[in-house]
Image (cartoon, rainbow over all chains, first blue to last red; front, top):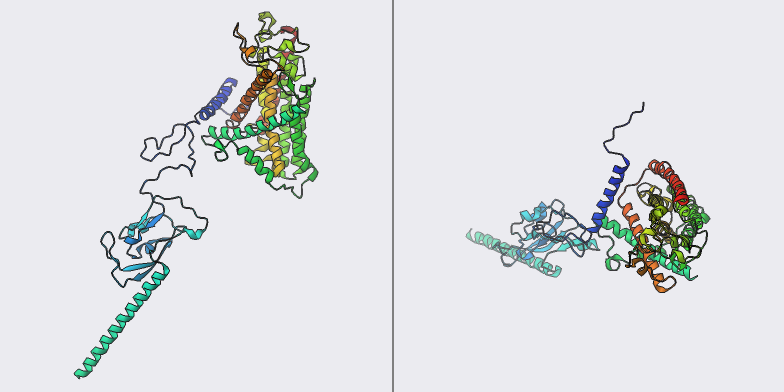
Length: 207
Length: 367
């Protein structure tokens, strides 16, 4: 005797036709709800997580879901507040921050939270093509000048343009500051040597 | 000549609209937006697709059978296009008023299969050959229930002339030479003694003249899906397993021709379904007493009103069927090859054989 595999579905003609029509009905319902669309609402909107019907696509470049102010996307450095402490470059797991500092010869002011600035940033580059958006650099930043912004759409044709330069000094200015520092160092060394010589001569005179 | 130009222009227009509708309807059914960039709501998308294809390089594989490869798209497109010649568009406009219209149509559509096999074999590609063989097996099989469905209509109408079949399904019946004395009874039942010759509308459509033709219509429609290689019968072109089936090696203009042939085939089988079962260019609105809905929406045959109303009703019914084809494609999964053959040989063919017999008896005793 032939054994039949038990079938949990009802395979009678009318139930099959009914099931087929049910499927057609379902797709037709979706078709007729195509006049409704997902709105680019903010996450605080009560309907943000439920979209019962209508098209789900947002036509991206023209409309997009708003990102909260505290979004963790593109890095931004407020160079006026930066004390060039190099902490961010040290903690970066992918080494995307490159900093070169020059000691200041004169008083260059204080940051907005009152920290005294002692270094010029000759180079402050963040390679956002390498960045992994972990946000560690922003947590270690002592003056909160390095932050993550809500901008996430910043493609470039040339990958070199993904390196963001935050320094406020032109290469010439940096060179000038460097010379000034070296000059000052030289002067200090000169002064020290002169002092030493004077001291030695004084010591000789005493003998 | 005028009819040919009209036919080609209308056909290409309808094909391009169908290709666009396919993408939009698919998108809406799947809760997407579909093409939006080319023109308002992306209406120029299919035009752009064709323009793009025309610009492309015409690649012929070095191992291909070049003559077959080059000839196949022409054969397919010509076969489908030739089918449009006998389709009546309005009561007085038909490209070729052949007495053997239905017979010619079935014959010329079958040529499509040769083009398919040429394309598949000529490509010298395993997927193309597999796709072509599946396609031919499927189309040849499904021509039997489809042919029997057409045959049952021919038996009821006693004519192979598509224009005569069209006239029989409306209030203009007695104006056709040779049908002056004919009478349409409701459901084709003389015993009911309800003369609907001048009521027209849906009551004289073939699916109502002989109610069992509705079953034939459903079977014809499903078979026609298989004949156009459309889902749920798209195993010859199953993207997920055969890449694209028989036209995998085609590119540029030749691919455009195959693509247009495919959509033209969709349009053609829908037109045939409308002409044979759904009252052709006749209005669906019946005359009810003094409310002469059918007469108002038929116009004067031969005059401009007759042309406009005829073309309007024919095209709206066709568009409805085309929409159903697209709708079905985006609803149902693909049938397995054994299920496909089971449906054709063990379900449709016996039902259609019985229906042909029934149609004969109906013609003998009822009408």
